[in-house]
Amino acid sequence: MSTQIFRYADGKLPNSLAFAYVFATFIGGFALLFNTHWALNLLGTLLLGHAMIIAAYLIHEFAHGTIFAKPKHNEWAGEFCSWLCGSCYAGFQYLRKKHMRHHVDRADVITFDTKAFMKACPVWLRKVILALEWAYIPAIELVMHYYVVVLPFITHDEKHRANRKKVLLTLAIRSALFAVLAAVSFKALVLYCLAWMLMLTVLRFADAYQHTYDAFAVLEDGGAIPNDKVRDRVYEQHNTYSNVVSARWPVLNLLLLNFSYHNAHHERPVAPWYRLPALHRELYGSDYAQVLPMHLLLKSFHEHRLRRVMDDHYGEVAAPEQQRRADGFYGAVGVSFLTAV
Image (cartoon, rainbow, N blue to C red; front, side, top):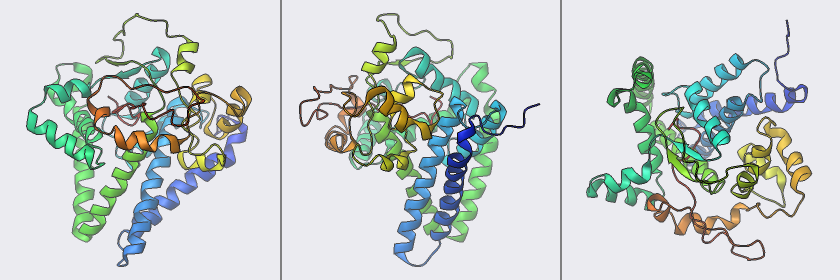
């Protein structure tokens, strides 16, 4: 019987450091929310938000089974981090299955079609959502999280209806915890919500520019997507971008647990996060057309923040020789791996 804990022998130190960082910054950041000094409140909000960000990217690693040797340990850790990130309503396994379809089908496979929702919803609601998006509040992600909660109660599908007890229990526990937090310090509750929104914003910024895949609304796991084009590995790499935090200073990509090396991740999905920089260099060298440093994407993220919500097209990426090659890249919305939809 194997006693190996981590899947890869070289994963003991980097994974242990990542876990320690998440626990330390989550607890430390949360404690600072109660301080009377605004500067320490700000620091605590940033630390707590970043703890959630790293925990979210660890969920992605657990989904691919790159951390622990035993699948059940990845599942337990994924469930735990889902609670830290507030993505605990649908369950880790459903989240994992949805994300695996993204890799297998080479498409953005979603359950909740946000573009169709925006076009069909009442005008007043559409205006409210767009106003919030204009103000950089991730309203679409908030709608999607709400949909995860209500789906078991509005569908006739037995698989989703079976999730009712889990959703109600999760709601009860989280509501009680938030009530206690509000009773102790309403300011801390507000700052916690800001930290969570910071996590959502960072994740949506990273997710928005990693693919120009077609998006398909598929309710069921086995639902087919149109066989209208060849979605092979060439298509996958051509429609995947490595939106690195920094090409000059690779260590900064640890801020997103190296998730930005997305071409390397899609080429070898079972490569753990700490190997991705070296794998990227091995596969693509230092001059790869699919690399889009994040400083090129800030203008697009700002200018297209409303168009991204409504437009069915993700926009275009210009040739590598053009300076502002990402200005016409609108990006995706509502494709975060943290939602099971």
